[in-house]
Length: 217
Image (cartoon, rainbow, N blue to C red; front, side, top):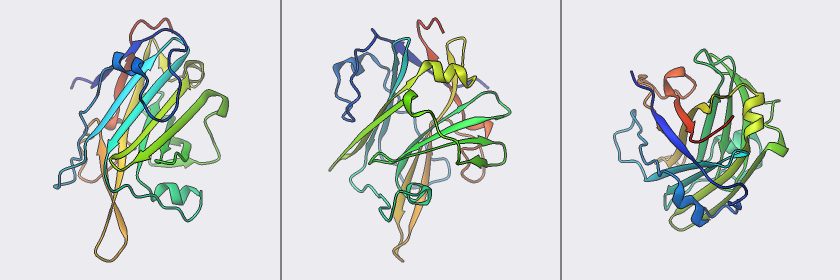
């Protein structure tokens, strides 16, 4: 089975300012990824786009979610609150055995739930991506929300994630729908279909590949 691959085009250094709007003209140089599915859901899913670029120093990423009914759990800023909100997600793995992999889950505000993980959903929430190596901003409007960020390539290298210009990556979204009883239940959306009977992103088959074009790292 061929691994899904997204080509991350190279731009000149410091040509993107992260503002959460995703409106920098440099984003026009990126490939627009729209190939998202929810294999476990029968209803249509909202449109979603992902873009990425790099400048040899940072990996820049952009999610645009077209959804007029964004759900954000605002009870506090806890992991549980973020976990019960609409969000986009990037997972990076060191190898197919998932020992370890790293998770960045970002809601529309943008609150970040970052953790280190091992197989069978062993999560270390005491771990955080170094603040100096990640920047995230977002915006919300009547059409949906945008999450824009930058991750230092050195940090990806230090964690054993960037190898020969490639990063094994999962791209996902959690969409919460209100139920008749007032509760919210998620629809799980993914770039790569993991071919599981029930939703599961924490599995090797849910990962694709980001290939940094022109990378010397």
